[in-house]
Structure formats: structure tokens, C-alpha cells
Image 1 (cartoon, rainbow, N blue to C red):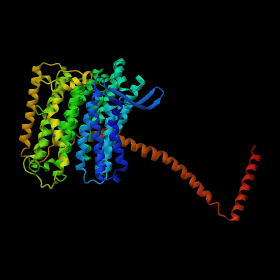
Image 2 (cartoon, rainbow, N blue to C red; image 1 turned 90 degrees about the vertical axis):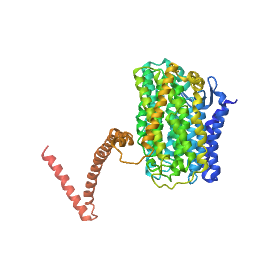
Image 3 (cartoon, one colour; image 1 turned 90 degrees about the horizontal axis):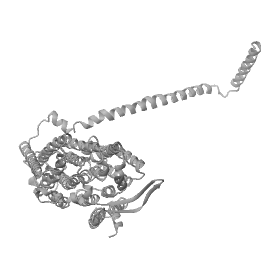
Amino acid sequence: MNASLLFLIPLLPLACGAANALFGLRLPRAVAVSLAVFGAAGSALLTFVLWPLAAGEGTTVTLYTWLESGALQVPVELLFDRLSAPMALMVTSVSTLIHLYAVGYMKDEEDYARFFALLNLFVFAMLTIVLSNNLLLLFLGWEGVGFCSYALIGYWYKETKNADAGRKAFLVTRVGDVFLGVALLWLFSLFGTLSISAVNAEASQLPAATVTAIALLLLGGACGKSAQLPLMTWLPDAMAGPTPVSALIHAATMVTAGVYLLCRLFPLVSLSETALAAIAVVGAATALYAATCALAQREIKRVLAYSTMSQVGYMFLAVGAGSVSAAMFHLLTHAFFKALLFMAAGCVIHLAGGENDIHAMGGLKKRSPLLFWLFLAGALCLAGAPLSGGFFSKDGILLAAFAHQTPLFNVLWGIGVFTAFLTALYTFRLLYLVFAGAPRKDLHGHPLPPSMIWPLLPLALLGLGGGLLNLPGLIGGSSLLHHFLGPLAGKAPEVSHGVEWGLWGLATALFAAGVLVARARYRHFKPGREGAIKRFFLGGWQADCIVAALILRPFAAVADFFWKGTDDALINGVLDGLAGVFQGAGERLRTLTTGRLSNYLMAMAWGTVIFLGWFLLRTLIP
């Protein structure tokens, strides 16, 4: 098998995206959208066909040297191994289904070529992150997904709020990118290379303090892209973009890039217990924060956005607990069921005539029973229903945290358990408000095209059956993903079967409690006044206000001082004053140039008198 074919995996969507960007509007619409779908589907097929190359240590293949200056050598080099291969297969396969969904969702959009070109380019950039064996090339893909995210969130840029959301996402994620950039420069100064394989292999030679500092910088970069505390405020606003964008970028792929980065560099990160603890704390805190916010949201996509933030927090907790396999397991199952939920949410909004407010919905089960069952499949996975994919993957994370048995991880495990209850509660709150009871508002929706429904079917099956990817030995499974990852899997939790059964029982009880509370509270829901606590959660703990008070307003005040106080008043004032003085002097001198000969003769006479007077004065007073 020719390993060079691996380059076709990212290059195929790039070529199709470039073709649509250049010629898309000149092509028949069917050709342009087919080209976009082909870019993602062909890449998925290639990943599947080339899967054997991931065996053993994987396959490294170099296309050419991109940059070469002194010690710096940056080859365009791909690493297709046991970590990148499943990630690439997930990205390409989920992207293909989302592309197919987008064909129906954007069927009335005139500027479709720009949309599909950006969608393809995003897939290329994401695959660059996943497959790169060089940190600088990874950083190129990292910035590429940031640009595509900005352009796709603000796709309908003529509405100010959409353009603002895209700008906010771009700026907030850049903060994290600065941390990542500093980490890469530091690693290059230490190793003289940015090869991921080399950095991981030689990381054990570094002093402990250096490892901790670099790992914390990597955590900062991961927090920006994965919307973790404190760089999380951009994700809810990013729901202003089209629903396929939310499903692709903010559910399945880009938001998990931070998790993948930490897993990719886990041999380095795992050398610092401090860094692992910080990662776990950030993940648990974000999971709880986002779950409380999801409880109060009224827009359907914002509920799912906070839910994504919370689930990615679980993945961070898994990395912090030292279990890469648990993090990757939840990353994969979450990609399936969250893409399903986002795409189903787009169908709900379509059925509700563009209405986003779940308080105005209700009774949609009668209008589309198939959509209800598909949404229910995703909801069961998200809420952690027993035997669903989400149940097994979330349980693996809680098990990894529980197995540490240290005071810190006992607290983090408790937060994770309580968040699991909140997850079931807000998920079934959403389900009841949208599908149960009678419509709370007269909504005139549109019939759903088949192309928006049938891509949800495979995602529902993958979400429900995702547990098979890593079925634990407790019920006769073989922990397939853990063994497939081999040495990349991290630590396996060491607990007795009795403890595992106990944790399963607790998870089942939490799920049932969340469902029952949601049923009692929202089955016959009537909107009422919102209390202070609900408004606090609705506003995301007023995080935007805090950021504005601590950063934006002080920054604006300092900028205002330097603009108006220093630049405008001082520098421009001095220059304008000097210019005024010279201009006034010139004006006064100009009055002497009357053009009359008599005035000039008089001036010469007075000048002669002054000179003579001067010389006379010097003669009399030596």
C-alpha cells in the first residue's frame, strides 16, 4: 500500500474547496454541492481504505520540506497512527453526513459556493491538525480552523450580531493561540525541532518545572479552541452561524481539537502531575459551569452549545486523570450524538418556522414523529442512558477520576457525578419543552426535505451503539479502543468489579433522577417570570459582563487615554500649536508683501536706519 496516498486525505477536501471558491458560482448548483460532498466523502473513504497503515507504530510519510533555515526544518509530514487514524475517520465521516445535510439546509441560499468552499477548507484544516507530525504544521491547521470558523459563524454577515459573533470567536480563540505559539517556540528552543514524535520521545529529559510550564501553556491553547474556562464565552454566541456549521465545528470537530492536542502530546503533558491536575480542574469546573447554564437557556442551539462545552470538560477531566482512551472514547461518541442533536435542532427550527425559543415550542412530536425519535436517540446518549454510547464513555471518565482516590480527584469526581445529573435534567427539559404537550405558540413551519432527515439515521445508530467501541470487560467487552491505542492509551483505572457495578448503579440512578425531575417540571410547562438565579444562569454567570469589567473596559480606558490624552491632546496638540504659531507668523509677515513700491522703499529705509543705529550703538558702547 502506497503510504503517499495519505496526503490525499487532507488534499481532497482542499482541492474541492478551492474549486468551489474559484468556479463554484459558474458551475451548476448540483455540480458545486456534489463537489463539496465528494471532497469529504472521498477523504472518509481513503481514511478507511488506508486504515492498515495505522498498525504498529503507525506510518510517517514526508511530502517535502516546507521551511528550512538553520536548525529549523519543517517538513510537510503526516503521522497516521492509532491516535490520529480514528480521529481522522470520525472527522471525515461525520463531515460527510453534515455536508449531505447542508445540501438540504442551504437549498435556498444563493451564495452556496462560498459556504461549501469554507466547509471543505475547514475539513482540510482540521485534518491538518489531526494528521500533522510537526507542531508548526499543526499550528497552521490550528489557525486555519480558526479562520474558517470565523468566516462560517459570520456567514450571514449582513446581520450585525452574526458578524459580531464571528469576530468574538476569532478574538477569544486567538488568546489561546498565543499560549500555544509561546509553547511551540519554547519547545523549539529546547529541542531544536518541532517534530511531535521527537518532542514526545525526548520530553523526559526536561526539568520538571519546564515541563509543567510548557504543559500549562498547551492547556491555555487547548482552552481557547475547546471553549473551556476562562476562554469559553465565544461558543454560545457562535450559534449565530448556520446549523451545519454548529454541527461540524462546534460539536464534532474544532471544539475537540484542544482535547486532541493534549492527547497527542500526552507523553510530555503526563510528566507533570501539576499540569494534569490543572487540566482536570479546568475540565470539571467547565463541565459544571456549562451544565448550569444549559439549564436556563431558551434558544435550542444555545442549550446544545453549553452542553458541548460541558461534555468537552469531561474529556479534559479524563486527560487530567491520565486516561487518553477515556477522553478519546467520549470524544468519538460525543461527535456522533452531538452532531445528531445539532442537525435535529436545525430540523426543529425548520419545522417551527425559524423559531429558536423552546418556550414557544411544544407538541412537535405530532408534527414529525421520526424527528422526535431521532432527537430522543441523541438525548439518551447525551443524558447517559444505560447502555447508550454516552453512558459507557462518560462512565469511563468518572471511573478514571474515581480510581485516583486523592482528595482533589474525589472532589472532581463528585463534580462530575453532579454534572451528570444536571446533564440528564437539561437534556430532558429540552426534549419535553420541544416535543411534549401542546404548542405554546402558533408556529408555521416548513416541511422537512429528506436530505435533512436521513443523514441523522446513521448518526443515531453510531451514537446509540458507540459503546461497542470500548465496551468494558465488566460486561464481557474487550475495551477495544483502549487496546487499539496501546501505549498511547494512558493509564487504565484499577478498581474492583464491585466498585464498577456501584458506579454504574449510581450513574443509572442519576439519569433516572434527572429524567423524573424534568418530567415533573416541564411536561406541562407554562412560561412564567424568570427569577434572579435563572437569569444569572441564562447570562452564562454574567461571564461577558465580568470580561467586560475586568478586561475590555480597562483596555478601552487605557486605549482611550493613549488616543485622546497622549496622541490627540499631547502630540497632536503640540504639533498643531507649533503649526499655528508658524502659520500666524507667516500671516503677519504676509501683510508686508503688499506689492506697492513705496512700502518696500519705506521698509528699506527703515532697515537702513536700524542697521546704522546698530553700528552707531556698538561704536558708542564698546
